Image (tube, rainbow, N blue to C red; front, side):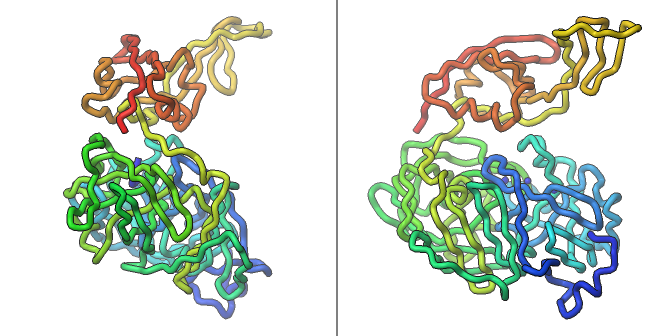
Length: 441
């Protein structure tokens, strides 16, 4: 699930005296700040303020422009001004996306502040990553943060540390590796190696923290980068220009200097989805969240360096969705629940924080609904009779509203032959389906 996708109002001129207003500046004596983030599907979701409005943004090394998804008319609250219309292009097979470019916005991440930030508000109701992730995401930011600050990402503990480059001091680390970065259009690339059919192949990869997969490779017979016979067709992710599809497989090994990950997941996106990405000279693909999360990483763009060290996630096995269906948050369902305790009230109906009490036995509650949005042809879920649009009510007797979307999806990554009993709501009719998870690789 790949490529995946959401200021200060006081006068800061005194605080920022001597600093450029078109760069991030950290407003404390240490000139360093620690920010907690949410890890969702191997992605980094950070709190961020724009013009005084608090939002949630995806931190993505693979984007050069900060983008706001305007499906909720966020720009009205942000008081976006000085706009011009432009067109953006990203992954996916669709046309370019229309956006409004806005200048001179105030942006704040923790104590890092920038006074003159360009923003791009995208007007596309279908471009909404929140349902696929199960948490609010209002936009994406990348290059503007990384080029101004040294960014440490501690995937294991779930925090960022932002530091002014002139104040950052490298520590000696015997178990670390320092890797040279190359840049194209402000995006970072590294040289790595993949082992396919016992052949070690050098590859140049975009570092894409905005992708949840492990590795994407562009097929190239002349280099030996091919998926072979063991693969299956699948939905890979949602890009700026639409859905991305391709082949899923495994490679024998992925190597970053001395660090080697064996039996790693790989995806080979269809050519029409990556036509423009392949135009970058010598680019062979992307390395994304399911590999990056296994390291704690320091990005130092100004010195073109990346420092990596293994963390507690390094030895996690690579798995994949064995059901063949993808779910997304699809609003809420109204449920009637039995109250376990008697309600002492004068009337038969009373309001509570999470619903309406009916008499002294029942209450109506709003619970999250998860719907099937992708269904792989020939998959166990499809062959069992499940359909796109079905609302998943329970899995193996567990009510899905008691789980996050991430927890529900994780059930489909369990062992081969695991039995699944799925109860769904299909247009008001309740149906039950049974199948086993199927190992394809």
